[in-house]
Image 1 (cartoon, rainbow, N blue to C red):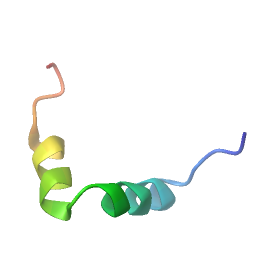
Image 2 (cartoon, rainbow, N blue to C red):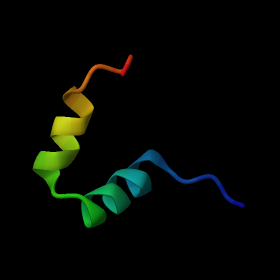
Image 3 (spheres, rainbow, N blue to C red):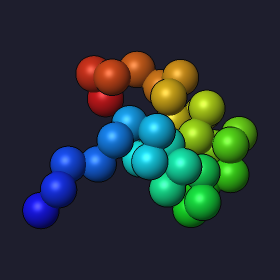
Image 4 (tube, helix red, strand yellow):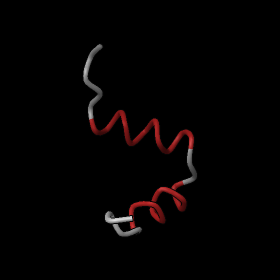
Length: 32
């Protein structure tokens, strides 16, 4: 299974989640 490039992963994430939601999740504390 080939590794996925960060850019491809980001694009895939944006395709599934709205950019605002992606930013919200990124802003959440990593500890939770």
